Every structure is written in structure tokens, then in C-alpha cells.
Image (cartoon, rainbow, N blue to C red; front, side, top):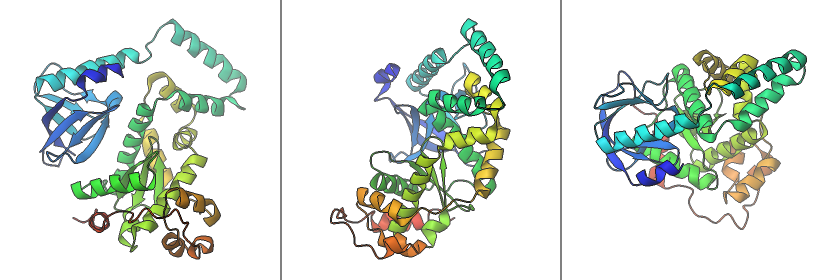
Length: 333
């Protein structure tokens, strides 16, 4: 987005509140490629807000009050004139790029209606879902993933995000998958060990961190979940669960009803995930230069448990001892 270039070095202080019952705290606000970055004064990231999803709750007033989405409970208060102007210009630029009602939309809607009547019982729903996912931008998928994570957190308890643990999660993600590091989120309880959400988000059950002695085991679960994610796109799964009408609404408005996200959150938490074979996992361990034996022992995978580490697996410690201790205590109160 070219409008970002003039604001690439812009920073401002603000007041951030994680939820209605949380205390406001001072944060450092800056603009990323597609996100508003909210960090501690020591520049440790607390959260990222998708720019297309940001809403202003008090237009024309100062301090400006923002939220990361229609259903979100987080709030950010900014009094810096330059930062407010930058955010509003970016929101306006994004809004101009959104599709607006007109002849083309009416024509597309009519065409879709005729096609639905002809093929709704056969190929149309799947084709429409695939088309919707293909045209949904990464920022849109990230916003939906954030909303879905929030709904899952309502069922399991909120995401564990102390400052030290959040930084350690980022370093673990970049070490395991440096070319496409996912955002890792830890929940205090969940039925599956891991979940993949739209927007390159992977959710970890806190028990993975608390019950194992080495981070290599957690790295193995992350690698296994990326294989499942690549085989079954999380956004496709969501829209298949949501159905045709929800897909049409997303295609035309860019939004999903909260009820759709709530239902999918319940489905994800109750869905059983199949194991990934050691043979399929071994190349991923080698690519990440990780010893597969700790994970193999944890999940009783003979192909990994007795494997000899690849000669290339010599990148040293996965993460520091301090980071591992932070992760094991990330959900401690």
C-alpha cells in the first residue's frame, strides 16, 4: 500500500485496553505493512490490528478511540494528531478500494442467482467457496482469523499473552518456520493440541508447553499442524461449515456474522485431528534443522524416535532457556 510509505517511521503513544474489565496501559503505536502494531514502551509487541478491520468509535472527536473490529472488546485511545491523521487516511484509502454497490455488483449478483438455481445442488457451492477464498486478501483472512480466535477464547479462556511469553512465541515461530512464520497463540485449555486458523494463525494448547521438557516437542506439534493446514485450508473449512449464504455475504460485504464464527469455534474445539506420520514429518524436521527424536518419543512415533539427526541439524539451541521458561509459564497468573 503506497499510502503507507510516508508513515513508515511514524510512532505515537496511546492507551490500550485488552477488554472491558482490563486496566488501560500506555503503549507504543506504529504502522506495519497491513497492521497497526501495539507494543510496550520497551517495543515488545502486544498485539497486531489488521488495518482493513479497524473501526473508529468516536468520529471527529479527540482523543480518537479505535477498535480492531465490530465484535472486538479491545480499545485503543490516541491523542497524537499526526497518528490519527495517518490512520484516518489509510482507512479512507482502504475504503475506496473496497467494492461498492453499482451496476457491476448488480450484474454479478444476478448472474450468481441464475447460476445458483442451475447448479446449487451440485458444483456451485464448492466452486463459490474456492473463488471467495482466492479473492479474499491476506489482511481479510487475518482479520477473520483474529475474530475466530476471540470466539474460541470465549470458550476456553482468553489468549495467554504476557509480554515475555509473547516475545518468546515470536522467536519460536521464526526459528521453526522462518520462511512463513505463523502467529502463535496459546490458550489455557482446548480439546485439540493445536489448531490452524485463517490468516496464518496456529493455536497451541497450554498443556503442550507445560507438560513437556523441551521446546523441540512443541516444534514438532507446530510442524504437524502446518502439514494439516496445507492439506486443508482453514478458510475453506470455515466457509464449508458456514454454508452458501454466509459465503455470499463474505464475498459481497467482506464480513461474516458472529454466529457463524461462534459455530465454527465450537466445531474446531470438538473436531478430532488425525496423526501425521513420522515419514511425512521427517523432511520438515530436516528443513527446520531440528532433532526429531524428542517429538518422536512424546507421540510414540518409531520412525522419529529412533532416527539419527540429519548432519544439517546443527543450528544450535532451538530457543534460549529463558524463553522456554517464559513459555512454560505463559498462562500462569
